[in-house]
Length: 117
Ligand code: 5GP
Ligand code: ZN
Image 1 (tube, helix red, strand yellow):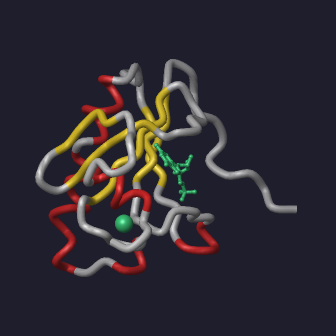
Image 2 (image 1 turned 180 degrees about the horizontal axis):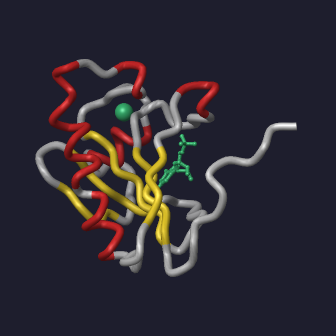
């Protein structure tokens, strides 16, 4: 676990607005929301990123996706939402603990990525 902020959120050492928890995952509101709905879903176990997953992680990866709809709807995204997993340097990942962003609201989230000039 070390100094991982998301591990600390998972065990309650750092406060967060939690909105879902089960044996595998915890979901909480992003501290700097980019859309009206912006929730992060993380595995309770420390996994750095999608580059560090194996077959044994399939149950937790499945859970992260299968609860997204429920979380999105409960937070006002009943007409769709977007899931993003930034991975590594190229993916723009800032926190090195695997997390799924759920973004939504009543208006479209917008273009998937901007063109790199
Ligand atoms: P990344 O760029 O790694 O995909 O996204 C990391 C996300 O974590 C960012 O959207 C950032 O706002 C969020 N974040 C960073 N630190 C904290 C924190 O201490 N609490 C919460 N709730 N969100 C955080
Ligand atoms: Zn961690």
